[in-house]
Length: 347
Image (cartoon, rainbow, N blue to C red; front, side, top):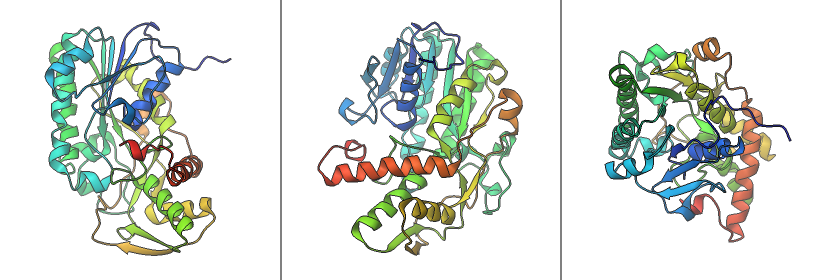
């Protein structure tokens, strides 16, 4: 069996801590390192263990709220590397409506980075977001791709975006003043199997797939789209995300340096709907809810920096990744109808 590649120079029994591990991305990251032979992984999330999206065999799983300082100290004990992906967040429907909850995630990074520093962790990763970028550069669906310097002058998305930008500063100053190696990735719309697909926190690819599947099942012939459908985004498949985190965390050229982690394939929401219809083998009439949260008009990832430094960028074509995601959500949908447990039912 071929050994899977990792970019870490940690010993296989060094302690890796991953917060937010009951959720989509961090849960996939725990599995990523487990599959690469790391035997000492501490996964942490405030949700009860039965509610975690993925539970990885052999991984220590702790149910703790890391917005609490004492819990952060417990979580970071003995850590060699810390990956902080914990946050109160969701898709646009959540982050536009619950800005205070999003802002309060600053407590998580404030306490986690201090606890990691005091524990002597060698490396600390923070999951930032493209929502940190200046919204005035995202007012046109045909936007230019955002490069890392476009976060300033600062005009982040209210709530969630400002929390991310300030948390980035914490990471930069812990390196400048205290010498702890910190790493910062600005995620651009991560999607794929084992993620939220219903309930209000899901992102556009999962929401559209679910709506198409539901329309087929109930034979409604219609799909409702938030906004006019012209808004554009890039979407990164989960496997590209986990590999990108590994690469970024273990590149010393990127210490305390925010970098885009996203696909550069720009997709309009209307095109996303068409692709989901094609995968589902159906054509639906479209209605548009112009009062629903829609976010910025356009956002794409400029991958010049990541290609220059890492000689790599996310490569999964959106059509391929969406087909995988659609198939997984379709199975989830059927499982729910049959009374079996699903990811959404455990949130």
